Length: 191
Image 1 (cartoon, rainbow, N blue to C red):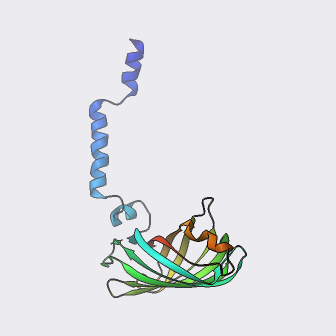
Image 2: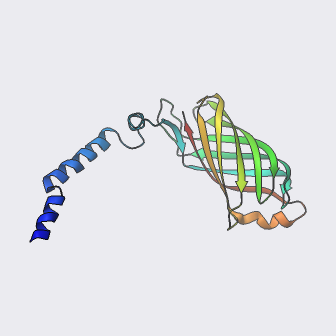
Image 3: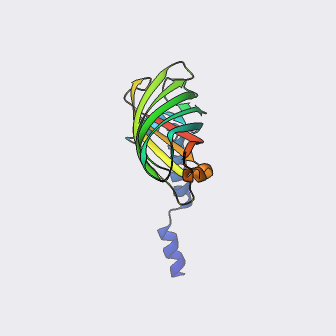
């Protein structure tokens, strides 16, 4: 009997629990997660654009092999299913990236410049730098953080995530090396 009484005293009454749940749900309806008001009320920065779907293909000159060397590359890609929280009606983009750095099939340190042509007709120029690390299964995940240096969203920060599957790793053993790779890409612009 004593144990049952202690449990009852340590738990809030059903009506109290219902009130707390209702208050939390009400706050969520007033400031949905990811909304500008929610970000402002939490002290976080606003996400201007989030593009969770995209793809790109990159060509390397000279090809990547197992020895680190200076390599130039060009990538072409698209972003889609973009959601924008500002007054911009951004839905997607086509982009071209040029970059260079000492890199190999196993690792690298590169700088790049990307030009995004948004569906609205506006452009953004992004400069970024990132390191490449091959993962144990041969898939490389590149997270590139950059800054919008001109155009739409100037001054904002970008985070682009690229996944390069291990489909061309045998080419790393050839004299010409791996000359191209492609895969999914996503990006956020925060400012």
